[in-house]
Length: 176
Image 1 (cartoon, rainbow, N blue to C red):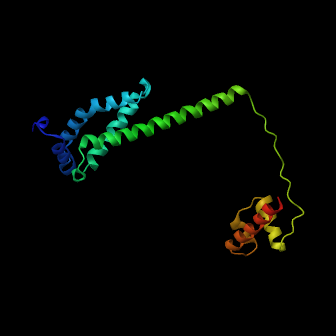
Image 2: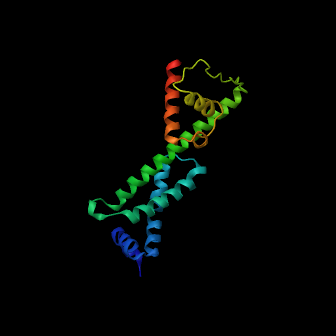
Image 3: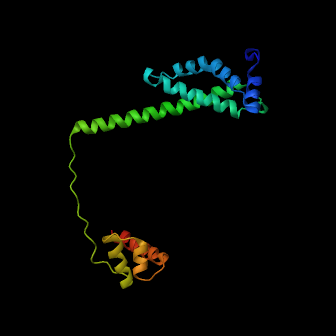
């Protein structure tokens, strides 16, 4: 079968309905230069060109598998839209990554930062509604025990422990 005689729609039909890998390969060859053209429009460095090209081929495969001609769009425009969006997302991720690295480098250049550890002073003057709330305060906030352990120790439902923690947090926020 001579595949170069077929247009995009016929090749896409062969790939979607008959899983014809030769047609898919032909589409990859046909749109390879287009992918490189789009990469050059985004001013991608040489180190990232291969990554962007691979992503472009993945997007092409996705476009071939999801294209529907019922939307009155040409395949070229459909693929171009998806490809541009993917490249914009990749370029933005790359910029964020570079900014984070620069931030870390700048922080490292400044020198070590010493953070004084503040000791947590428990609020002893808290007025609790019940001795149970005080016990939960000590076990959960000071000793950092699990809610399931507290509930089991006091033969309570975990929901009751959650409610007591909520009341304690509310009192703590009001006292600050």
